Image (cartoon, rainbow, N blue to C red):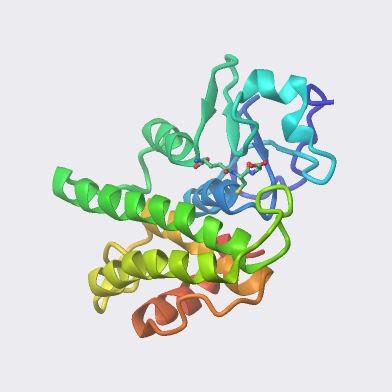
Length: 222
Ligand SMILES: N[C@@H](CCC(=O)N[C@@H](CS)C(=O)NCC(=O)O)C(=O)O
């Protein structure tokens, strides 16, 4: 039952946010944007792991919380529902501005948000590509098409080109510290490369180096 919360067992040094609940799929690309961000911030939020195989995210109980039937969804301690990974992350960032993960000046924040939005588009395009490249999403794409996948991958590459140019010699996408842009872009790389063992963004040396480096972070544990 949605109402019965499965709380995260870890009580380490993380700050725990009261009675908030984060509905997630542990391996889901979009939920991982939030869980990686929370880990980078050192914040812990009780989780509810939705049962994807049994379509728990499409039950009337969950649809009352998130009519899109998707995850992540954050329900705050006063019952406010926040959907969309980016909105959840920005909400937490407003509550806990330190360490700053969207930059510390208006210009930095604009840069981080621009990269984060490119990451958002990258995920959307890459998911369509994944649905047509693997047969792992029969409910999304019952007849995966290689030709369609190739066309979609060109649109994926258009955004990867931008990220490869933007990162330059930086350690992280927006500079020398992790930001929400990394938290958004990293999970789609991880999904494609680790979960589905696909050659994704393999011809981007700077993004490859960025990925390998970010992969060593505690937040990136899969
Ligand atoms: N735009 C949403 C996308 C959420 C989304 O599509 N989540 C996926 C998991 S990565 C999901 O819930 N899929 C289940 C489904 O579509 O049935 C966000 O950024 O949070």
